[in-house]
Image (tube, rainbow, N blue to C red; front, side, top):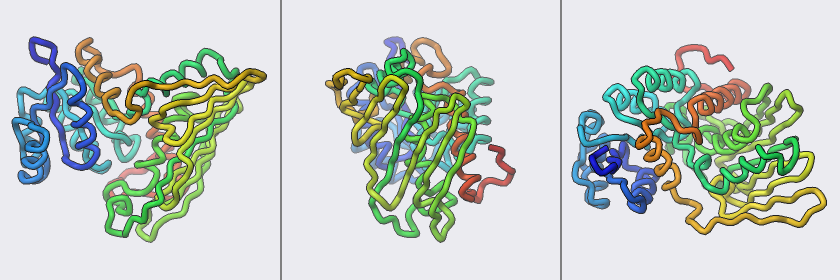
Length: 335
């Protein structure tokens, strides 16, 4: 950081999610985007011109070598996360890496080990965990507002038709519903219950070998269970619910970035919780990164390393059950 505590960001990749993140960074005091990198100079320059970013690099190395960059936001597809985040850490940069953190738990463990070895900040960009209402849901559950948790339900499906050439249909880019969409319901269940003891799953696979529709049943030693789903071919409700022995919490459509949720205690009147802020903003996770960097922390308590590793192990276990394997995976994964 500079002498005024400004956190200087470098943006890696120039797709839609990078555009949204950079737009939301502009709403944060003390955040400055100083550089952007893409695989082509034209793409980086166009992005820099759009957002008024002073430096644009047509290759990753320039961004990692830029002495003014404090933290790199990795917005590449999944298959490039391990390499991109790893190179940034090796160059001495803090990293915020899009979810899912990597293709598998082995790669995630390598990144976490590198972060810890170098004493550098690393966080998975699970913006849902930083959302004020999701944090309130987790707080209520921890405080026993609904008693002992018995069930969690959550889904994330898109109706859009994705042709075979789309990255979501390409095994080489970590395609399929699970890593793009399923990571949200799985992470929601982990937030409330931790890592499951058992994992069952069923899926419809594409001709290319990625999951188009996946249903998951997770179980915990407490007796709690989670029924989760993700889809690339159906517009699911996008809702979530957690039920306990003394009540339940319902989150309406867009559960991963909600405007409201309802707490229903057994025998009581519904209690509605609202946010006055933009529920879909990435600024919550960006603000958490900046808070951690200013405090000298190398991981966020909201999105801890061990939590990201546990989610990746569950995603690996789901893929084992449904038979999805990416071509880059040369070693046997253990769920």
